[in-house]
Amino acid sequence: MAKVYVSSTRLDLELERSKAFEWLITTHHQPFHSYIADTDTVRDSCLKDVEQCDVYLLILGQRYGFQPKESNPLNLSITHLEFRRAVELKKPIVALIRKSVPNLALTELLDPDKAKRLVDFENEVRSRCRPAEFLNEAEFVGALMQRCQRRSRPWQLRPPSRPTAGSRTISRSKSNDSARCRCHSPTNTIGMRCRSIPSTFRCSCE
Image 1 (cartoon, one colour):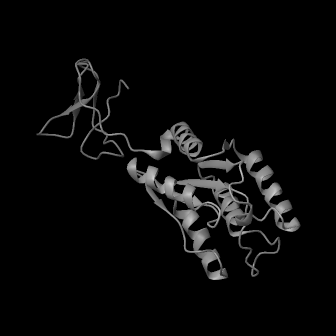
Image 2 (cartoon, helix red, strand yellow; image 1 turned 180 degrees about the vertical axis):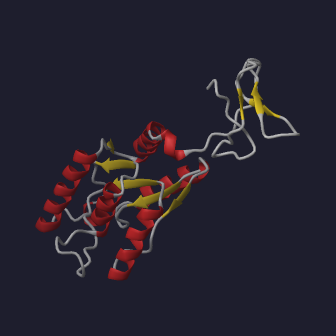
């Protein structure tokens, strides 16, 4: 299970956010987000949440979003600041960009300054990762699944595999801390504990 921070504007992307949360929960991940980004205090909370996530999920529509005034000399939006923090921290990034305009009234495309900032933001995202584009709900869910699969390593903890014939798992002696590999090599004994599972051992033949 991974902690996934969902970053986007809200007014224009309510459906996409809802679908993202629904899919992530169904696949046993922990999606979360900060409160409505309309204050400087919430800005700090958002950036701290990005620091705590395992994966950063960006959904970009046609709104640039709220721009906090304090400690923000470039006048960037909350979402833009979150993205830069994720890049700075080298977080795994999944980016999805909507290329359709379902409702012009919910966008900021008619605001020249915000429209330009939105274009610059999208170009920055494309320079940092390979975003997927979508036009509708079905394409959004498909793009989300595809991009998450490509990022599968940080997204899930694989259950331990069961021993099979010829496998190199370790059998531990009850009387001491030595162990012998099930490849049955008389030289392959080891007493080093595995970091992730203290009760098991790793074979020297691995």
